[in-house]
Image 1 (cartoon, rainbow, N blue to C red):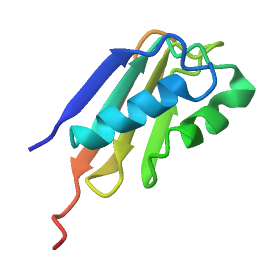
Image 2 (image 1 turned 90 degrees about the vertical axis):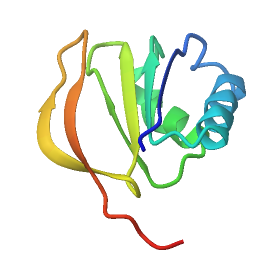
Image 3 (image 1 turned 180 degrees about the horizontal axis):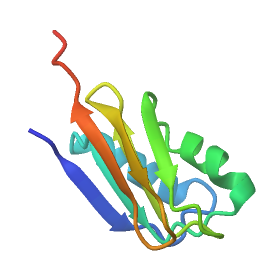
Length: 104
């Protein structure tokens, strides 16, 4: 089963509070894919803020607008990118496949 979370991330740029909330909700709910709307990140701070969420083993793609309006991430232990990707300013499409289940 895939569990997907999406929320308005207004304030994501602020010191750690919103990033910690996203990390906690993602881990507590077993999310495999997350979408953040309106993160309002500066181009130079995207990597820092993604790192601040503490989601090890996740990949992220942003809408490539300035500032990015959308941010989508997925757990690479659960999903693999399948190559097809479109990233215009107002939406993101990215094909992924489910990773083979690994024993615990």
